[in-house]
Image (cartoon, rainbow, N blue to C red; front, side, top):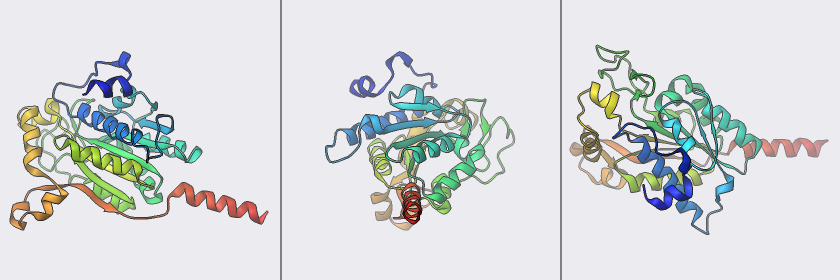
Length: 279
């Protein structure tokens, strides 16, 4: 991570971070910090350090809220979006960013995810998606691919996995996107778009977990897992220019859905204003 980002946006006394060697979570945290830095440094954007709140739940990914030096809150398992909803509702002017894991937001926190998306609450949710519960022992998560092994699926996972970006879009999110830890520049740009979007935005960022997911499923080293992302996760512009036969087995990264739905706190404020006029 560039030293400028560390000194401007990290709690130095909380470093070094505790993620395993090769874990992609540090890269995603850097991407979030870089996106925020570029928005703060742009005089045309109405974003500053004081109106940013970082919220996280429980899990490997959620440690990031303790390292990032912003107004931040480390909440309970699966409840990060619920806490963030309360913060945004209390002060709609804030830019509220949720850092969560695939298990945290789509298993125990799944209801909070779909209802915040349905309401189009003005939150930015960054899902650190490593396909497994990394912090608690390598159990399979809602995004573990069909057939892959985990401590709680020793013979292979039979559950069909969630596509978190499409799940959020289907629930009503006005912005959903996908990034990964190999395509850094593209992912930073996606996160910037998500933060600036008025309404509920979700970015499902594919991380790598060589310690549990990679080791149990013979994915090789962290470098091998990043090489897989390089070859199989294709940015939007390149993806749509590829012949259809070359897209087989590949996944698109980029903005998947974008809609101009009314934002929840603004609509609620209109109701309050109308009610007061009647009185």
